[in-house]
Amino acid sequence: MSAFGHQRLAVLSLCLAVWLLARQAPATELPAPERRSGYDFMSRETRAMQDDDTANPGMLWVKDGEALWNTKAGEASLACSDCHGDARVSMKGVAARYPAIDAALARPVTLEQRINICRTGQQKAPAFALEGANLLALSAYLGRQSRGLPIEVVIDEHGKPFFEAGREIFYRRQGQLNLSCAECHEDHWDKRLAGNPVTQANPTGYPLYRLEWQGLGSLERRLRNCLAGTRTQVYDFGSPEFVDLELFLMWRARGMKIETPAVRP
Amino acid sequence: MARALIMVPATARRGEIVEIKATVAHPMESGFRHTQLGTLIPRDIVTQFVCTYNGVEVFSAEFFPAISANPFISFSTVATESGTLVFNWIGDNGFSVTESAAISVS
Image (cartoon, rainbow over all chains, first blue to last red; front, side):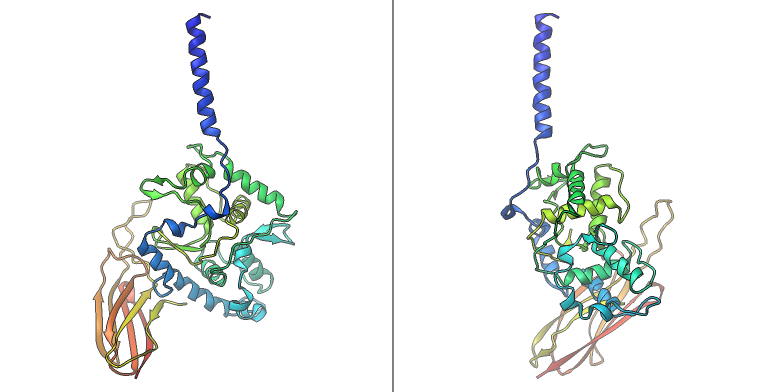
């Protein structure tokens, strides 16, 4: 090989090394004081909409959820309130702890799945459709009872493998665009994508009213948006991958205050 | 199921200007969208909103396809006497929702 060839190879290798380093710079977890909710990235008008319960359209679902909480259902003819009493007392802080390990399934479940477990197990009623109006309403109502409380998911030895699986999904490059969640939401959260803030992906207000959706949606619906945007095969609602990822995301946002039902642009 | 959210101050002084807020649950399908298969999704919107205060109309509005889902309306009226405010939304396909709220004027 000629001297020129060697030189060219060296330059090429250097370029490749720099590119690889830049591409693989490890995303570091943000320290607690720097964690920001999507709320901080919103316009004044959208914030006002979220803050005022009479202007927040998510409250329509909360009101529906309250009605469902007190409605008898299933063969057992039980309402949620028959066992759990007043949700404003019994459900305070519950949403802030989900996803949580279900002993019988020996894996984490989301609040939505927990509601359906109760529904099929205790009320002997058919499970609500995931992402359907009823399940969204009940989870919004339960989430509302934790508003203002800090997120505190528990990662014990049972939850650890699922948590690690969720972390792995967050940092794994996937899809045709070959992007990981972290590349946008940890490395570039202070930038914009097509004019919109990228944000840090702290799931503080789910289920939330998204103006783009003209309706309420769960964290999984939002995650499916992101996956489709990076041209990744989307997971099904309630799939174990989503639950693991949600567990990791909630842990990542630990200590931040629940805003359910939040409003997002 | 809850179909509307109403905010009316429970009490007011006579002659006071009070702010009233009302949201109704409605998809406000514009009639201009198509499904993925190309068929037109028929229009389904709220067309009219009326608020009466002890039977007297104090506010009304016409709605059009460009208005968002779950339309929110905020307006003010003068608290003249104790009584009831009745809110009525009318729309396509026989849509009709009526809600009321009491106000006590001293």
